[in-house]
Amino acid sequence: MASLEKLVVKLRQKKNEASKLRLKAEKQLKQVKSIEKRSSSGLNSLDRKIESEREETSEVSDILIQKNSQLESIKRLITAAEERLNREKEALTEAEQQIEFAENAEEKQYAEARLNSIKGHMAELEFEIKSRQKTFKKIADEVAKNTEIKSKITSKIKKQSQSKPSLKDTLTSSHKDAEKFAKELEKYLKSENIAKRSLEKALSKLKEIQAKKKKSVKKKVSKKAAPKRKAAKKPAKKTAPKKAAKKPAKKTAPKKAAKKPAKKTAPK
Image (tube, rainbow, N blue to C red):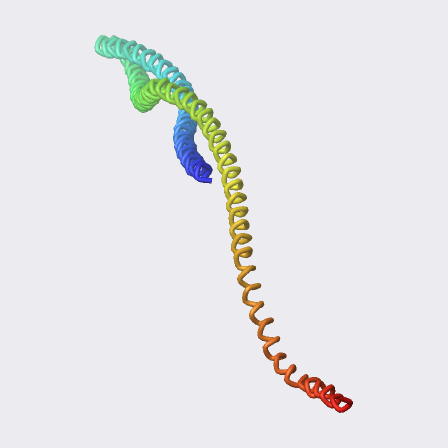
């Protein structure tokens, strides 16, 4: 009985220790799974961001190609207009000289008409050059702006790409830890269940022994109580004859009858 009680105490302690280890493993598993989930989520989110930013970079690159192409085209047109303007300036100088050295009014009039025409062409070319230069500046500003945007996105992609290995390492290590703690948890659960079943068996046996002992004690007590009850009843039976002892007093009549033989003395 005492050894069984000690065994129950020991098994209870063993179960409590197994429960503590199981709870600790559960907590550790929960923590590493949370880290694994965050790392996986962070890595997926980072991949989506990088992919989105690469698409954005591609779009900006397309815009830059288009804008740079426009700039090249405008630049060529400005150069061509400036060349024509220079030729018109030369023609203007020539027309002015023709006016100056005209031999007659008709030559002078022709030279003046040519001069006015050249001036008109020059004005048109100057307007065209200014207009194209204005457009060139506007597009050049857009190119500079988009180039800066592309540079920022590229820098961001580079920075995010550099953080990927760290997240991958965290994900890998947390996954390994999760597997390790899952195995430990399984082991501690088995130990706890074994200890629990052993404790239940020991408690059941202890209760059974205690019940038998209690029953045995009750039997002993009832056996000891039985003779006392019998002893208490016997005096009650003895008192009855005492009451009946008065009846022999009534039987004195036969004693009187005993005197009859005395009458028989007469024949003597």
